[in-house]
Length: 447
Ligand SMILES: *Cc1c(COP(=O)(O)O)cnc(C)c1O
Image 1 (cartoon, rainbow, N blue to C red):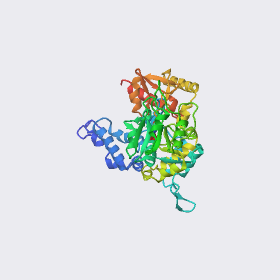
Image 2 (image 1 turned 45 degrees about the vertical axis):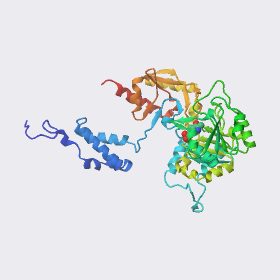
Image 3 (image 1 turned 60 degrees about the vertical axis):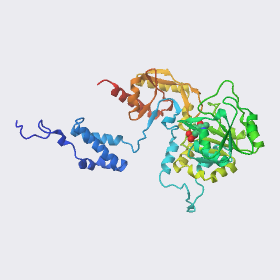
Image 4 (image 1 turned 30 degrees about the vertical axis):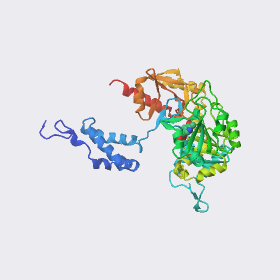
């Protein structure tokens, strides 16, 4: 056999010469379609990466196109990746808090394009009723409120309320309620950042009605009651019941704001300690504040409910424009309120026996062990309330490949075992979870 002229693919030929050229790859139908979906730059980067792998000898030149097609199919338009939350924590701050209901997702898609958020389609004129649908849904769900206002998040709602009612004045607050809400953000610093002063009363563990009585004076803009959603003070403690505090505030004609933190509109029997808007308003709070993406189970939003005249003052304040909620959140919030039970509420109500049956079946499929495991409400409220349940225990070595897989799966590492709790994993994603574990096992197995 003649060896002087190298045959393509033959022993004398440099295989790198067979790596497909950039323009040839970009002209491939699958690649052209991906440019529509992901944009020029992202696709060009993936093309270069595929060629680079072939140049480095990691893959054969013939593998460049199939490898590229695979990479394009897996590529996402943003760096945020979907995660299967197998921690059993319902409102997981690091994992985006509340997952949206199917209704809210549909509403998001409807509002994503041009939409009539500030337009009256009947008259063809500009509408001044931005957010009317969400407001009406809130008032229908909480009839005790005279009016409602939605802003970007709970912290913004608190700043808007205290600024509009007390900038240049004092906010009376108990030392037992001066909380840090996470990552170094303190509610008290938030409040004073726009010009209100604090009048701190009582002690960390005990505050009494006369403490409020003495503090309220000429300079008081409002009294603030904050629910400590992420910790508990137990032992020798005392707080003033809301009805008594409200009675005092009304006598002295000072508005009482209750920051509830979590978004319960009505009492939740499974979380008897968690405050709710209907009860707080009935007990005399003038304004209540809550988040949209905690136990309410909706999008990030700050919800204010209460007296019409106070809400009107907030709506008129210049800061209201700076914390205005976007059309996507309005759409998702309204759909959350009017639609089916949102995922966090369904996960909260999961029957432990049904969870055991489901987890036992999964343990069999995954060849893991069924172990008791408590779920949690999470940063969104219900501090310390355990939710009895179950998990599948697997070798801890699977944790890393599961986190970096697609879909990413996040469980809990305990004593070198990985616990997967499916309380917050939708049933229709369980096959995806099983496949992810299989891939993680293959990746973790010694070659
Ligand atoms: C979570 C929380 C906030 C902040 O709400 P965000 O929606 O996260 O901005 C404020 N107050 C309390 C009591 C909270 O629990």
